[in-house]
Length: 80
Ligand code: SF4
Image: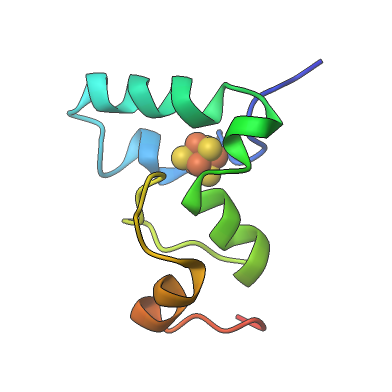
């Protein structure tokens, strides 16, 4: 059974903004991405994509913002 987040392959957290921060990336992978649905479903990137259909490239998995604050900051709508 695959317990990885369905967004792992395309998530820019791994090939974009954090590529020079291996320890941080590894920590996110353990805490969210490879931890099964109970964990990745708590990732703000995952939650944002589920609710709004997209996720800003620089949003971090452990962002303290609510989904509503994220939507306001990045101009996301339920139909975006
Ligand atoms: S950072 Fe979040 S959305 Fe990206 S792969 Fe990990 S759990 Fe999925």
